[in-house]
Image (cartoon, rainbow over all chains, first blue to last red; front, side, top):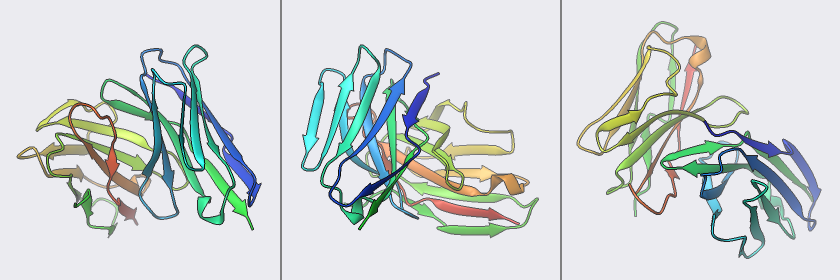
Length: 110
Length: 114
């Protein structure tokens, strides 16, 4: 099955700085790469996704990049704010099944 | 519109008891998934439904776990003879059967086995 590795497991940044989370995957057939944000005690919420025919996608302060050759993709959050503090999960999909990374706990220091 | 809903939101049970967890997917979503999330951990896939069929049950941890889906809508996850290690948040997600692939999660059921 798919193996998704996510780094770092924890990330502390100063408010206003950028945060970067990286994921690698093993299955070259994976073609869809979503990122979920989970606040404490809440459900995971999709924040951005990218498909295999696109190298980069931006939505306001968040962006995702994909390198299919190297099988890695990254989430970039710029100008971080306290409300960005959460656990972030990357995932890949092959056919119907999502495989998730272990998560990154992001803490934004005021 | 209404999102994925789950009930109960919290469940405390005694070891050895059976529990049933319910998921109401978004209307029209043919694909439904169950995941388990232990404290501070990632999401562990349990089972996938397409319509009322479960073509992938590979994540169910033991034969104490079972799930069904009726009418292509509501799904129930049943845990028999609960053990303390079953304590976790059980999340349900649904999506349209084809593209897009986006899964929408329910709020989860927090299960505590004493």
